[in-house]
Length: 431
Image (tube, rainbow, N blue to C red; front, side, top):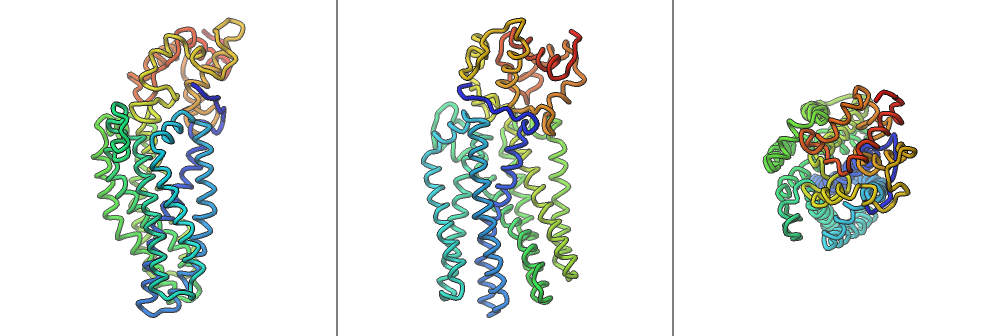
């Protein structure tokens, strides 16, 4: 309400942030689990006195460094830019509530960068014990970054009693903090195994390739048991109303829930197949497929987690419209066009009703709906609805339609947004 609206049309409905976030989260988990993969694989080479394994670790480290430090950093900045313009009010809450946590996380991130560069550039220049210690420093800093970010991310889903108390520690160690931390830690180890398949399958020497593929398969298969247990713990920790909404009350999430269930055995099966001796070309192809399945796997989880917050951006505190729960009635009384700051349309009038309806749509609908896009397309959703249907749907928002925020506009603004959707977007003339 206090910031300009970024109108994305086709890329709206969460598409832009979803693409950016899923890629970044995938790489970020690799940055954690992959750090552990580096030091334990190097330790394997030292223990077995295998020059081939240590050379493999060095090559894998270069791949790891370029992917996590370049693409990971770019997508991380992309997330900050995207959330700051799509939902600046919620971003402001996260910054001000967790300013201390952000400072700590950035210290860990700097430690990650420095230690990883030292680790890569000191292969064969330091004794193995010192070199492994640097690797452990990297992994420790990476996992602590996950520790901090996990608290902030899950605060948005389960803020606990923070809306009433404003207490930092209650917000950080929120009801889903610990199950989410274990869930993401085991997921990070699994992803390390997936990326291990990619580099191991490219090895030319058959015996070494088969050995490292089996080693990577262990990283995928062993933590999967604990990962599934953490997933059940995560679900059990959700507040009852959130659990019911995610698993029963939101038809839009059913494809993602089904996909998550389907991808789990696919990953296990793929890990088992990668552990047997395969021709080089087959193992490379399967490694690429497994990496893509892993991306879709974490993507489905993130869609489910994000959907669980609906109709809020910060659960039970701020709606996806950037209006605080406590302010909805006040905004409704004054009118959303009067309450918003960055508008040139303040009053509903017959001549400009389409433009005014667009302003209402941008304020109250655009955060969740695209216009002609693949996610929550308002045209597709409104296609079967008449004006009477729209008039009955809007009052149901936040009630029967519990996954939608309550309509915060007045009666005139309701008619204006109906006019915009029905006449302007759908090009219909019936009343």
